[in-house]
Image (cartoon, rainbow, N blue to C red):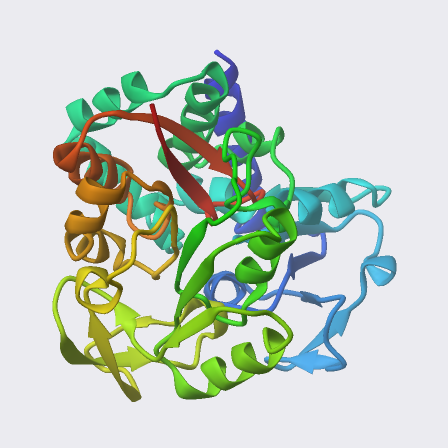
Length: 355
């Protein structure tokens, strides 16, 4: 009944917002979803705390404090901090608000769904047994709760399921069950600016070495500068995949860079098994969707070294089951955990800890 009431509330909000209401209508955020809302109705303006622009699409851009009482607002903040955005709106007196996930769901495809949610619904419908298998794998109750909440959000567009999560990216990949000993050899797959490597070194100052993989030249230069004070870091100017090859890469998306047929940059990729000969003890992978193929390229190390692994599984819903299927197919003596580090659909990490 609770879920039905939430959907009914979203349907009523949607009908009023896109109907003949006399209330002023705004969206929080300036992005593709704000544009989608603006394409369907004559908005009174946009709300954005982080821009100096005063006008967008011919409408005023307001700060939160300027939103008139009695307004209706859709929050189009969808990635890392949608809960925070909604909480800000809820603190405004006399303002009725709704998150974009629920409004898009209530629109019956008149508004585009957030792709991660749409993909999850399709994948779950095709392979429900795979998701149930994964749920039964987890080593602790917290992992099962994380899985259930993330799936409730993705499958039902229910942002309330994420109320237990905060933005804790500084803790990502490092949990109490990830223990380090002197001499650890760390593989930072998708090293980006070096932040994760620095966090590893803080937690394991007596490490043996680090193998840092980052395929984009400009980002690698920045990472080398950031990590210049640290010893024994081997920088590999390639991405991790299953074979050695050259691919196109979308380098214009910051930390969300990914392999793309229409990418603007050519990058080299290779298998970890080809690149690193020494034993490794901890592997982190955040490769914007290339994680399964990268795992295929490190099966020798998984089999021979039995390393700890922390693998991002949020880029593609199939990765929730494909990643454990690959790793446990090599060797099944791992405890499996799941943790989530944002308020939205990004930054879900699956851990594999040797038994």
